[in-house]
Image (cartoon, rainbow, N blue to C red; front, side):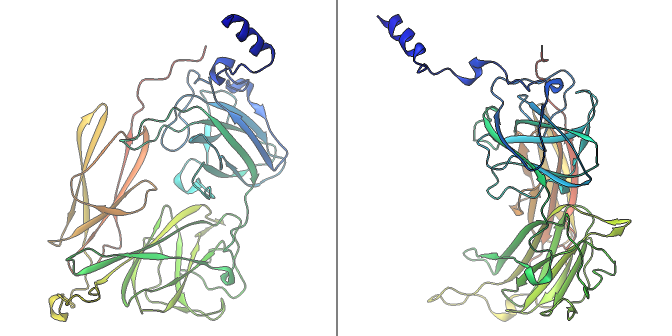
Length: 420
């Protein structure tokens, strides 16, 4: 009787079969990449049962699970193109290549500044590159290997969305459409100083330069985008920009042709500048002109520290004389790496400052800056390149405007089984 029921259900199409049991997708192999186009492309797919071929590279920024499927697109004209997996159920690893053999591929858009425009809900990845007319580009979609314990490692298989489209012009290309940067203030019980953070992510692909716009940091540039920020308190603000070589301009004023530069004019590396509470500042990010302006994505951060205001109904424990108002010299930060274990890797980073009593903020790769103590430990990191940045804040609230940077590469573990 039970067998009869199964046969009836199967006949009616009601018997559910696990996706992996249906076999690998038709585009599992590089040689069988699915052709897509013309633009814009928007499709759904999955990588259930897909495997990794012998010699195939790891995909994405932080490594992939070895369940890749392939697509290919031929550019009908030259220009910036964005490939993304925004809106995917699967945590994806995404890479774009040129080449005709799976073990002889050249990755395009391989650095951090190529990762954008970002997916709005961070439910996917994006790669932007400058396509050349007539060239064929190979697109690999895999499961992302990155995770943070105590979470379980990702399975690496699932459904995804793939979109290929002409890269849009930034919404904040013009001064009049400057993007507002919002921040927040952190206060700790018993601390004398409060910490303020503000950040924004952006890109300048396909951006231009307006008539009357100044030269930022004394360079013609030519691909600027704009931000608007209002200082929460008076004091010194510290601005940083990651990653790559960029031009920065800081101004006051209400029109692009009537701006007043705030000294010092900022370039790259980042720097510090005095601000007044409630004052509005305009920030321009541009690419240095070297034949054509530099274009890519970036992360903009603003940090301030200032005396904490006593809570309502609580007596003030801070007197004006308890802070060192004459100390305006920022500290210098150092990073030292220690390897506790090579396989699986466990790394410890020790932060130092030339001013006793300093605290530290650090960030790994594209994660935001967070408070961290010397002896910061990292484990379960994905294979590939990583960048750690840290800066010190001295007891007077001065922040190091040039974070210390260390870069390291973790080797891949045992290779995935070869495909057939």
